[in-house]
Image (cartoon, rainbow, N blue to C red; front, side, top):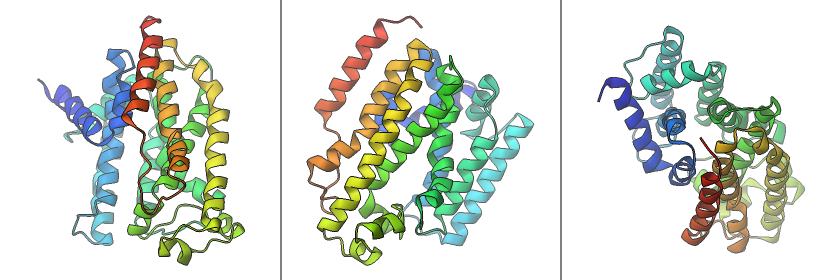
Length: 290
């Protein structure tokens, strides 16, 4: 195994270990495309781990230094076209193969840096700055790998990426509080009578339920607006994205199933639902050529 192959293998390991739903959906892609998706995931996961490792003894300043050092090195490697980083080699090969703009990776690192200091967002528009870099650009990076048949695929990919992220925010309110963060916009929470103190009390109230219902409706609206973009992708890529859309946006279904008890339970997709989605998508995948 040469260094490039080893880098792709490391990215695949990170994906299979930390992104089980993402990895499952990747298996629905034609085999030659999978390693490129693993590389994009590997980059995002490595940066995210620096920021959000709760077991880390590093201070915020030390994390910022570590993220800045690694991020600047990767961005420099992208420009030079070579890297000695375990993740960087595969990332550069993927970026060069599909001519993916470097600005997407700069935006992602910017959002990861925001996580180190920003603890809440007043307006949805404020949150979108963060979500663009943390999620929308992931969709934009993916589209060239998946194969765009129309330019509109990019805008739809942005919306789907945002929907995925917002669904995670709804599920992870408690976990994010452990990190001192609230991602649900403060002004929107206030419109439903919810304060930061109410969330920190971790007791479900009618006001919190109302706020969660509002956020869930937004996820479903974004998912619906993104759906036409799936038909704008190469046919062999569509089953993968259909499955990812159902599973990731489906997190909000699971929040409803636990009666919004997000502080005491973790909304998770059942194995039965995962298998049903995967089998349905797999059968569609068999029906199209690579």
